[in-house]
Every structure is written in C-alpha cells, then in structure tokens.
Image 1 (cartoon, rainbow, N blue to C red):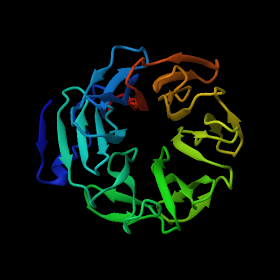
Image 2 (cartoon, rainbow, N blue to C red):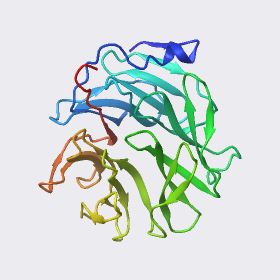
Image 3 (cartoon, helix red, strand yellow):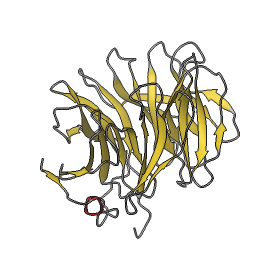
Image 4 (cartoon, rainbow, N blue to C red):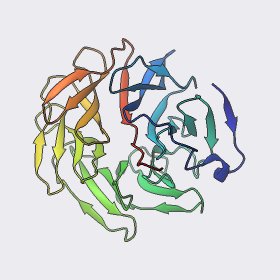
Length: 291
C-alpha cells in the first residue's frame, strides 16, 4: 500500500476518480488486523475479504465516493484519508478542524459532514459540513448536549443525525442544509443508533425499543416496524443500492460479524466469519450508465 500526503485539498479530491470500476456489490467494512480496526473489502457474493489499510491505528468511520471506487476514511485520531479500494493507495486530506468524528461524504462527494465538540467535552458535539472546493465550514446545529452520527439524505439536501440530552433517549432529527431548520422525528423513544437512509427516505437503524438492540425500519411517513429479533446485538445497517437488502453487524454467532438481510424474503445469511471481528459495512454506490 502506498501513502502520500497531498499539499492541497483540491488535488486530494478528484471527485470523479476517472472511469468508474465500481462493482455494485462491493461492501467495505472495518475488520481487526494486528489489534486495530482497519478497512477491508468484500461483496454481497461473499468473496474472500481483502485488507485495504495497514495504519496501525483504529479507523472509526468510512464512506464511499460517488465513483464507487474510493473511500473517505476517518481515523479515531481525527485524521482523514482518501483510499483507492483497487490499488490500496491513500492520500491525506487536510481536515478543517482537529479531532473530527463521524466524517461521512455527501452523495455528490463535494462535501462531508462530521460531528465535533469545540469545548473538549465528549457530550456536546454539534454537526458541521465542510465543502472541499470553497473550503467553507458550516455549523448546522447549536443544540444542547450531544449531536452525532450525521447521515445524508439521498439528494444531499438534508442530514439526519442523533441527539441525546444525557438521559435515556437518543432521538432522530433532520436538518435542512439550506434553511438550517431542524425537525425531530422521534421523541423519547429510547436509544436509536446507526442511521441508514434509503433513496425513498426510509430509515433503517438500531434501536432498543423492544428491550434489546434490533434493526428497525422507519418509512418516510413515520410508520415503523421491527426487522430483526435476536438476543444478540444487531447494529450498523447499510442499504444495498437497490434498497432491498441490508448489510449489518451482529453478535449472533458469538463474535461481531457482518450479515445480510433480505427484507422482502425476511431471510438472513452471514457475510463474514472473522474470529477477531467485522463491523460497520458500507455498500458501494451503483454508477448510472455513461458516468
């Protein structure tokens, strides 16, 4: 794996990434290697996993560029990288602020959202968006306590996020990027984590409304139903490009590993079988014809 530091942010972010070599079923995820959470790649056909990074430092979040070939990698120490999933090459991205968390690319790849505390407390993060070309930084929330896990809508016009007040609830909110107006989607419904947004606005998430962390589906009209039922922890859902399957992490086999859920068939199958652990799957986007 090669690593290079680029001197300018613009040269780091080649948004198109050249001709797309995306495989629709590519699934990137975090897996343990030498004691650290590194980036790995597999697919929905369960091909043998390939380790892509060897940072020797924990990665906290990954998200795909629109080309379906590159990943934005946010390490636990706040460092950002652009990773080529074919060559394994990484480029350092100059972060707009130190110690950022939850960095996730917008659908167009021209910006990313993240959460950050400027007070030094771990319990008062707000949500920000940084635009690559203009280098503009926008603070989207100024709410009390903890705002975290930003997740983009499919059209890139809004962000979903989680907000907690220190009590027994982390509710789902939505903020419009243009107006900065916020909307609370759940109220005191215990913990919600790991939002994933489908193109039609349906949300998948992990919640403990049933007394155990299961996967839930919330339609755009607010109708909610439970998708999994198992004593294990089910979390970190990621939509397939077609929106008919979810990849997710679960401890149902004793270790934390990835599973696939076919929603219509209500069928489950294991995706990874790692003794050291696999988590946080992210499904590669599909390129439209001619892109």
